Amino acid sequence: MEEIKNVKGTHDVYADENNAYEKVENLMKSIAEIYAYQGVRPPVLEHSPVFVRGVGEGSDIVRKEMYTFLDKGGRELTLRPEFTAGIMRLVVQNKLYATNELPLKLYYVGPVFRYERPQLGRYRQFNQFGVESIGHNSPLNDVEVIVLAYTILCSLGLENVKIKINTLGDEESRNNYRNALKAYFAGHIENMCVDCKSRFEINPLRILDCKVPEDRPIIEGAPKIGAYLSKDSQERFDQVLEALEALQIPYEINQSLVRGLDYYSETVFEFHYKSKEGNDYGAVGAGGHYGKLMSELGGPDLPGVGFSFGIERIVSVLKDDGLLEDVKNQLDAYIMPLDKESMIYAEEVAVILRNSGGYKVDMCFDNVKLGNMFKRAANKKAKFAIIIGENEVKEESVVLKDLAKQEQITVKVEELVDKFDELYEASYGEEEEEL
Ligand code: ATP
Ligand code: MG
Image (cartoon, helix red, strand yellow):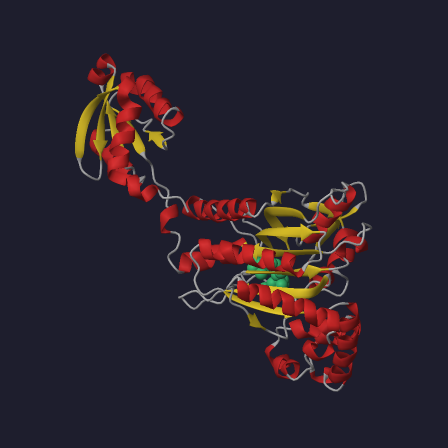
């Protein structure tokens, strides 16, 4: 039989790496909760127009990257390439905007699918965590979303995260800017890549996003949005920057930042981090304000702002910089029954330590020599061993051994949890700090 392998561009997550994903996602969720966001789980499958209309026909995602197919009932469906448009569909359909206080603040985590060329930091199925704050136009809403993202990255241990920020202005600003870009690129488009040629026709703003090195010098010479901003948009952007400064959030303005999705307006931003290994995985997260997305999907005319992190990229930079040492799989106790007759009693002890003590406990089901069981305990990085033989079963006790100190005592089973707490605290108490 032909060997069965995973689909190109997907990846398996297991062992310590899975712990890393759990740690990263849990920390993101818990900080989003502190910022008063609530979780949502939109479906992976949506009718294609959600993304075609939402993300925009001119975007690379819709033009080239969507997993779109007909189901057996003839419906045209798409595996979500991002969350924002699907969440907006969810909000509109369930009328979540009909509440007496906006913004509506939602977070999400899960897989997304894009048919891209797989390479470092780029998969076809990857995971995103993100938030949307919907229904309030205050520039402070944009700022709060940026502060949340920045706080999460800092809490993961990443220092020197770079925030690149720009404004795309309102519709009037963008129309003027689009015309200026059209005039500029008209003189250069002959010498640019095929993608840029079609971007020139569909939406010349997209050209600024081109990653082809030969096109970059032409793009660097293009007019900048700053000169085309309406008074309102300029003021709004200034207010965003002023608040970021007051909150001591470092940023750098990058006027060629336009983002790859058509729904953005006003504030846009990206988070960059160079790991010490020097690997460039691309932006670890990105987002911005969107003015017309909800009305585009048939809802009321409410704006929103959000960001999205690439979990794979974040796990990669954390791994490169040694910031995942604490997620290694480690047992609190490994239970070692010395003979077949001790097995059931050993299982009872394991259940007591797990259910009453809350400890991470595993037990040896094989009837092997004690030396072998100690080797297994070391492999599982167990902190304590619990040895149970004929005597212990009779006495209703266990031998409890601190594997770091190499000291052991005999404990009655009814005192086990208290004694375990005490010894654990003595050896590992300070390590138990919460993030
Ligand atoms: P890029 O410019 O790198 O293609 P993007 O602008 O397409 O990114 P977004 O749509 O804003 O990215 O998605 C948010 C985040 O998701 C990105 O900042 C990145 O961390 C991550 N991401 C995007 N595409 C991929 C991918 N193919 N594989 C892994 N992570 C990705
Ligand atoms: Mg992309």
